[in-house]
Structures are given as C-alpha cells and as structure tokens.
Length: 241
Image (cartoon, rainbow, N blue to C red):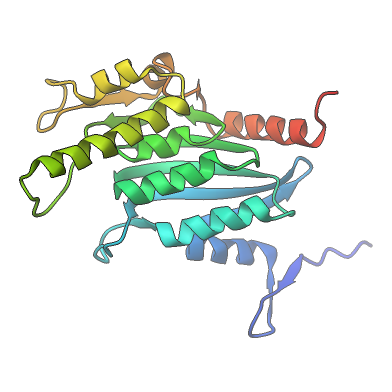
C-alpha cells in the first residue's frame, strides 16, 4: 500500500518540521499572504485589508496593512523564480496616501502576472491599489469610494498647502487613469461630485458600475480571477510565436 504520509517542511531556527497546511496558516498569520502551487504554477495570494498604515503607527484596535511589510515582499516576489503570479485580494478602507500609492506603483511595475480582486470594498487610496494589477476584478457587491485627498490634524493655511494637495491629487488621478480605462475628466467628476455622500464630497461605485465606467476590468469572483491569472501565467510561459 502506498505511503500516505503528509508533506512536511522543515522550519528554520528550531529544527522542527511542520505539515504544509500548518506552514501556510503561519504565513497567513505573519504576512496576510499564502503561496500555493498547482498544475498552472505557483501563485502568491496577498491581502490588503483594513487601513493602509504609513509613517504613523495606528492603534492596536485598528486592522492594518503595513507598507514596510508589503513593499519588500512584492520586490522578493518579482525576483523569485519560484513564484509565477500574484493574486491581490482587497478589502480596505484606504489609509496613508503615499504608502498606498507606493505599493500600487510597485505592483503596476511588476512583470509577473498580476490580478486584483475587490471584495467588500477598496476605498480611497484602495482605488489605485485595485487598478494596479494587470487585470482587475470586482465582485458585484464590492464598493469603491472616490473622493479628494484629505488630511487629518493640523494644517498650515497657506497657498503652498493647497498646491501640495493639488499635486498629490494629480498624481493619484494620473496613476488611476493610466492603469484603467476611465478618463481623467470622468474620474475627477466622480471625485468632486456633491450630494451623493452625506458628509463628504465624492462618489461610491459598486462592482458593475465600476466596470461600466472603465475603472475595473471585469465583474467576477475568485474563480474568474484565478482563471485570468492562470491565462497570464500560461501566456508568459508559452508566448505566441
């Protein structure tokens, strides 16, 4: 009878061995990510959840995604010969603008196959993160909030402050429009819309609406996102002659 012993993998440091599922569970706990391999190749699944944390450490009661964890991980994934593609799962309220935009720029600059899937929401700076992958998906119930750049805390009331906000907002608009099919005019219109949000300026889009406007590529769930990623991986491994 064939040996049905489960796969075990040595852990660094203590010399103990752990079963593969237990190793994946620990990876999820440590980094909010997991790597799996099948006949299509090795896929790394990375989650962007809660609030994107920037230079200021948020309180312990806030669910965060730390940019200093995500950035080196993305760089190592791009360089790794063992990883064939990246699946990005998004359910974020937004957060630090420059940290989120930095992560989005890293993803958009990757040569590896990438697919993003908006689940729940991808608000504020989550919008650039959603469009940063080569192909983007959103489930029908997903929501995306688009609004002008805002800042909490003390501000200096000077023309230079307004100029800084204006230029930062311009960077976001250009990035989103470059990595999606929505026009700058339409995106700015959504960003500055009044009357839709009770206590703010901006717009809230849902899955199918985001696709119809060209912000997101497709409406779909996990299976559709994975099929798209498999297709990219296969095309990269076997380019058309």
